[in-house]
Image (cartoon, rainbow, N blue to C red; front, side, top):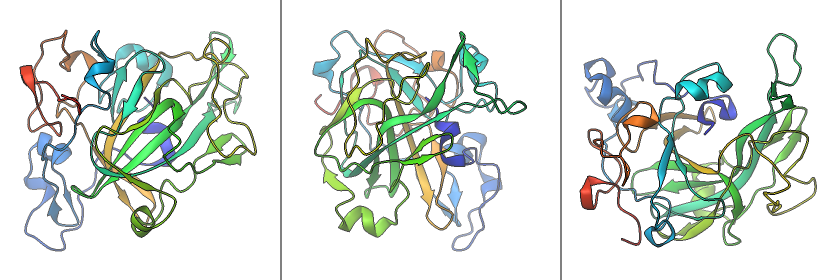
Length: 299
């Protein structure tokens, strides 16, 4: 859920990219187009449908819930108290549900979790009397050659053994991921990432990175994710998948130009699910199936 906090990146398209190749200008776009089909280096990124849901239909027979949309809900802002832009979509699912690749692409994984600090006192922020950590936890990042875009699937309780894992680096305030911003050539021609097909299991639903209290998920010196007992390791949040789609500026090593795969750009209650019959946004990035909802990879 913590897209806006990750890696010190500006997620909201607030500046007009330099026009270097075509006569397309950001200022000529509508508000929705500026978010969903932005102009980057003079080239408009087309909003074509290429994604399926990051879980199998056979694993969610009771349906699924949208926990947070591209904009944080009022309740969530009570915790974050900052930028309202979430930058992705959260799917609430039972702990341990299989998470799958929503497109063909290259995958790697790492870990991120830092203690939240009060800006004035520099002390740990407390939630219900306990310090809290925020971050993607165990996550899988994918590069999708079809669209030249990236995906993050975060807060996993486990990462499948086939996905290369880059152990995080220890810093003063927590653990930071490695190799998540590696050069594009390394994605496609090194052992730091592996090509997988749509529907391949990449991990399991959890709430890693969202620690509550002094427990720690990552153990110094480990080379693979440390599986924790959800009855022992507690989180202040619900089990869910944080899912976002974006570009990477390799010169700045920065994430940007996030897009809402639903094309809605609002709070969770505007997002359609099998049980909530609201409308999809304009030009979603999801391939649509029955009832005009995003398709499952096994549908």
